[in-house]
Length: 235
Image (cartoon, rainbow, N blue to C red; front, side, top):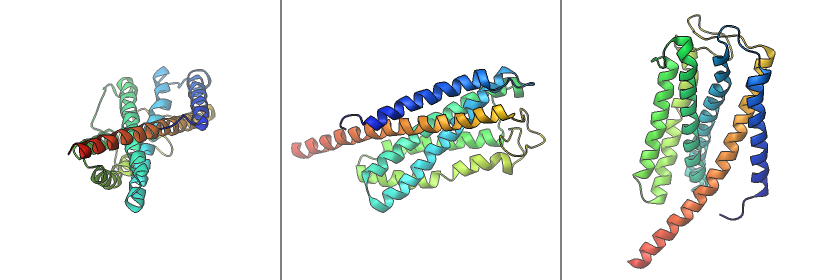
């Protein structure tokens, strides 16, 4: 895997600074929402985590296309890393959404179109991980994974657009809200600044974790190749 690149170390520091700044902005710069109060602060992490999760699935789909075209194992590692990171952040999005929903909707969970499609999307990518575990041959595993990541990405725009296509109680963050949306609010300029900064900070977090995970994947592939060689020699 080699020595850790200096650029990655710099990215680690930048990411840490941005994340700490985002937290300070959420709790000390963004004003308190008049109706929802402190629970509205979850919004900045909830949306940013959802954005990062979908970004991870987008990376996996693009990497899948590039793997099918170039047959380079590096793209398989990137696609796999994208799915893993995407699933973690989507889970954070779902959990923080439940925390926000409890005092606003008076329930931890409801089968709203956005919540339902987000859960289905998470399960689709969980199946991607199971598929990879069920295929031992590296090339076949990478090829199946690439095709699945491309097809599975259909669930991402469906989840994003669900609150704009269907009648829902989930508020639309940017744009007009459904009249039936509970928990909707208009962002002040300072709220919008912190919101956009949180998206940038979480995008850096994604890039940083992705780079680390790709390096770890390269090491794992190297170990797997050594095992295959030892098995071949044993035969």
